[in-house]
Length: 315
Image (cartoon, rainbow, N blue to C red; front, side, top):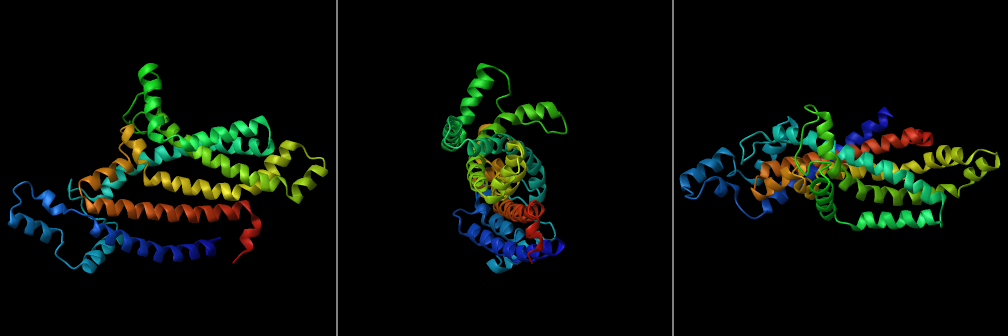
């Protein structure tokens, strides 16, 4: 396992460097000049020149990149042009919010999607299977922003059960924090549950037709043991893959959901940074998101080897 993780980390390093080059280069192609926005309405040429020198924007692009990536390797992602705060500080403030939202949404998705997918595969062709597929298709089709607005109107405005927006840190008031995050987590979780249900059903259908499942039934094992212990465990590989990728997407920021429920997470941070042409923040967020995706992929491969002993022998 240690050798496998070492190899994957060695592969991840050039991948991250390549991503950083694309992020930095494409950022320079965006229209607009952040210095002009910072200079104010008068746009004094002396002030503009001072700001360009201060943020080293007069340097060649290749030198700007090496200055940025060199700082990133030491934990310095630059300074926000808008707030004058370190980018790493801004990310550290918003990341726990998005992680909480992502974890809650993923738990909801797993609780709904995996059992429904297993039941749908086991009862293939039945009414349960048809209903599960219709619900899954609906979950994939309904836009998050529409579902979020409908939940706010029903649950918050009409019934008054949950707050319509806002955020309370988990460390300050755990119960109130969960109450403020449960609706946006449900909005995200239902769409993910539909995806997980479809993948779980597909994986289970393939496994339930395998020889070892028929052998287990021939030995007289109970259906629950056959389905949950033998079939589901071997069907978990694609489910783990989808789950880790979905979690990476959630960490990237559920922009619309966070905007609708006024959650100060990654999504709101990147939207504000783009509108304000705060390039340092955008670069830092995209780089951190790329690292998160790579980490999720490595984690998925490690879980594969725990679930399937035969993969541990692969070099």
